[in-house]
Image (tube, rainbow, N blue to C red):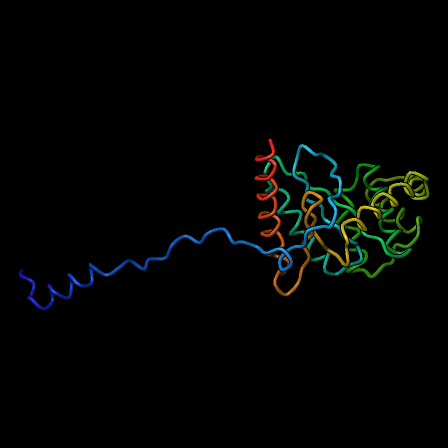
Length: 218
């Protein structure tokens, strides 16, 4: 069947028009001072051979409670050259008790078991967990001996750990929780421009940035 002349002209014009098909979106570019902040002085990392991403948290923080499943899921998908670590924030005696609980859990090798339980006890059950005994009671449900929990909670090593973590948090210029620190160089905090779900994209962006800078320096 022959195409009428008018339709043929219209078809040729349509085919000559530039294509406006959707193009793959490029990796977003995040801006310093808006989506992240550069620390005034670099902070030492645990393993200089890897790119460290640090979560600063507090068990009693409602925002951290909702953030934690997301950050742990994200950490499982990071490349092998990324080292994910956590440090507890502490600005008062209650937060110090919770930081000691985190230290004890790590020392006993039950952090993976009790981490979410501590969050639940504070944010759902509304417990304070402000004494060695109350924490020992919780940890006993996961096989820990109460006497050992109390001993570690009150130990000089726990006090030393708290001082070290507090010094790091101060060097990070932490003003709230949760926050992410990339390789001791950049701080990411949730705000109007960066909701919690976007923090991981900013972290990925900064990890790539650090990786590129490390590669150029070699």
